[in-house]
Image (cartoon, rainbow, N blue to C red; front, side, top):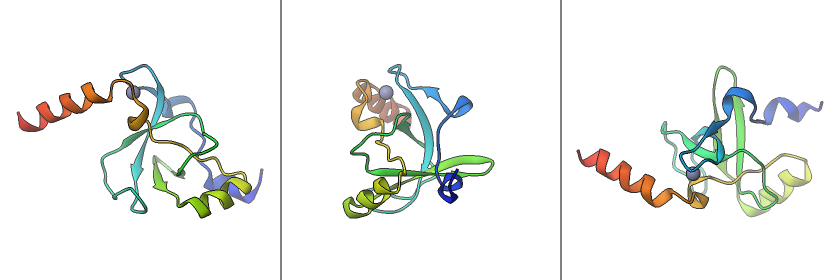
Length: 109
Ligand SMILES: [Zn+2]
């Protein structure tokens, strides 16, 4: 345990969901920074941290975590400190086109 442990979100148990494509993801609330706009619309994040991850996830007691885009220089420092970085699921999702088309249909209904 280090002082960072309370700042680091590690998905487990009920956090982990199945995306429609079958991938294991968790949902997080975007906070403004870099490529993300703040939103209360939760977005799927791949469960496993990745070496070239560009997104940090922060726990919030009693709430879903937040996700923030991290600039490349900051990401290097965070990785050196042992903080896991993640990638967003949607850009990698094999079903993203179907899911986005369905969301558009729903929005215009
Ligand atoms: Zn997916």
